[in-house]
Amino acid sequence: MKISKQVHQIRIYFHVTEEIERFVNVYLIEGKEGCHLIDTGVAGAEKLIKKSLLRHERQPSQLKSIFLTHSHPDHMGAACRIKKRTGAKVYASAVEKPWIEDIGRQFAARPIPNFYKLLEDSVSVDESLEGGEVLCLEPRVTIRALATPGHSAGSLSYFFEEEGILFTGDAVPVADETPIYVNYQQSLESLDRIEEMDQVQLYCSAWADVWQAGEGRKRVAEAKDLLAGINKTVGKALEEDESLENTAVFKRVCEAMELDSTKANPLFRTSIYANIEELRSDRK
Image 1 (tube, one colour):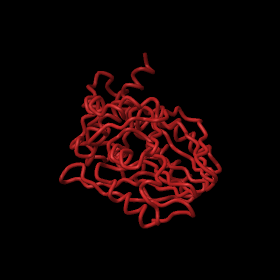
Image 2 (cartoon, helix red, strand yellow):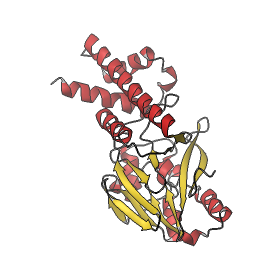
Image 3 (cartoon, rainbow, N blue to C red):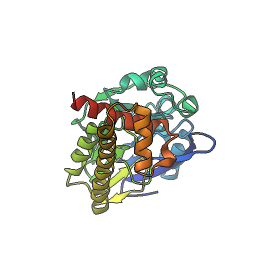
Image 4 (cartoon, rainbow, N blue to C red):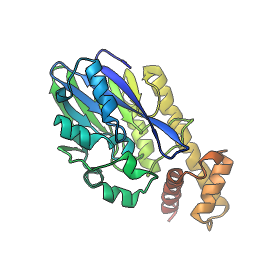
């Protein structure tokens, strides 16, 4: 789907388990000298990405760069194959480079279902980013990296300066999705950082529709409220009984916020445990 003069959205559907279907959005930027990809989707997504290139009268060999927002399987699953077939340069987080270049290490720390079906192989990172870098890839294609950790330890967002488009990866949780993060405070600070960017015209999320400027700012504000609400609920549970086990706090939060459908989600449990750890640390 074309979303601007130079940018196309490619939506990739996949199954986390047989029962759970999800999608992830990747984005193709067309330049005069080549093309540039924001994330790669899951393993096998290289076929859809190739079709998109050919549909726009581009050859796979014209793909010059891959920008990974973070290391999770639905974002880097096809990166290795695409790099091998196109020679594209991979840009990614310096913090998450160890997970990107050694997926066994990632699986040991975050063993999600069907990990090796969604992510078949590691990929080498050509240029590590911290956030703040400005990359002039070619005339009229300038990408600025923005550090937006929280969802993962080193999540990055990318701002396409010429068109005012911000690719946020999973940095902005949405109300109808399970909020996943490893650090609550970093997530809030990242949302603040995104909110402060008044030059954004389009917000391109990995797990939602494209938002125009006004809608995007509204969604960022809603995401901050959602995370603050979760943190407040965790804090209340701990105030009522500081001795509660983490599992008991998690259960209380799900019940209080009517999030029963997320009780079986181990990644959401990780999110709540992050709140618990931060709150308990603050009280020491």
